[in-house]
Length: 285
Length: 338
Image (cartoon, rainbow over all chains, first blue to last red; front, top):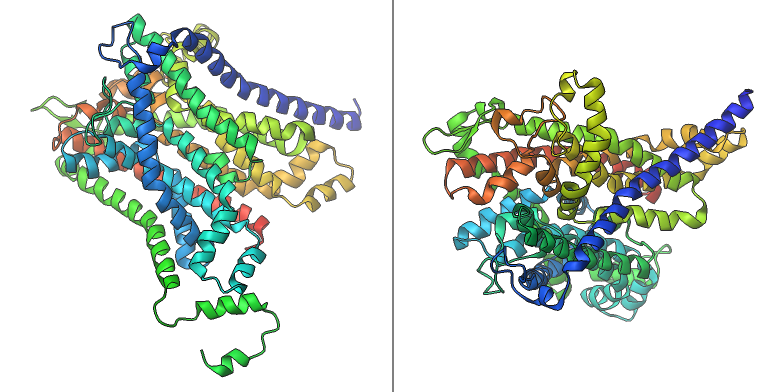
């Protein structure tokens, strides 16, 4: 074989290996979707989605409390993390071009990669110890620490994409700087900001480890923010621990289907609506 | 502001920019100052969170460190029965190291193949769609990886990987034991799948930040596409790709649920990773398994927080290192570094 054709062959080989890698990576994704849909779908019914869990071996029990808990946790977490994240992101974009700003930006990226179980220990040490028992609010604090760096960074990135002519025009009209930032620049950047928030919600709704240390799980509906609460990922984990019985196993697959539809639904809609503007959120959320 | 300052010619600045500068000059305290101060305070909360985490983890692990001194890091016993308590994290640290090493060894070559293919070779019409699909792997919650790992992937590993290995080279110490599917190898392979989206999408971004002059120079002397990647792109993107790999390692070290569900959860000396086909435990999986059973104020809880501290310190070191590598490369593209 001549040198020329050997080089061509190596080029073809590299291409073939690239295709193989992509296919190999897609295999688990396809299998997960196939199994979760195939095994979860038979469990889904109106009663399954609305009833409480109660006794684990009761085949007519549902995951209504887990769905409710996940929605409550998402709501409370967003109430804590979104305002802080927005303002921190505004700071980084508007005033962050100095040493302090660069430090914050760096630490924010480090915080985004913290193991979530360590954040669970943090929320346990602060909130659970203070209240004296496991509670929904402790879970929301843990999740908001996971959500905060994602919202901060995507807000900063989206604000920096706003053309400076828009800011200058507002300033030229004599509008105050804070008003310009909030009513002109942030509103112009809102698509990117909302994308970041939605992706961070998708990320936290699947988090399990920090919830294990903070909200504990419960078989009943919501009974106050200072009480234990259930959540979809926790329900799946409880079902895994009881998977010797047939009905928790079926319930686990059903809960997995609901959770994956929530998470992938958020992701897909965001990715279809915006054309992947924030590489940060794409890689880490 | 004095009149002389106002009158100074500033050709480079637009009128709006001058107004902005005027607004920036400190006068009395205004709504703008309030805005800047409050947003600074909110940004500073990120520092606060990291500081509070370090303080709480150190404070929480003081009791166990006082009882066992360095034995906490070198010991292999893990007994939480009151009276004969003994805590050593060595098996779990080694478990984390071995599973993460498997994840990097298997996941990185696959990720780099994907990144090279998507950044340099795939048909343009497919690049975006394929990238999205690979990124969806990152969106799947780890508890679902765990459930799938336990009921599906475990049997793939047992039947197609462990059984053949065991029957041919089962005499080697690292492959000793009965293929069971719930062991260190399965945990490492699940981690490999989970780090693929991180490593491949950051490596892809880094490769796409390589200036096209690099590629054109290689093409102009007659290089094939693969030679362009090898000589022009990979060398240039080297440190960023390295950073992406380290970020993937950080992910693998901190990953909890999927590992907890497939590693078999051994305890104490039994968790030492002497064979890939053994049940094991990682730092994160021990915390997840035992935390809600530990009594508040007990030595057991302190030992678990001590594991958290070890995990936290390794995550900080790994991530600071990785972020510095990735930043260096991506900043060159943004033009903010000379």
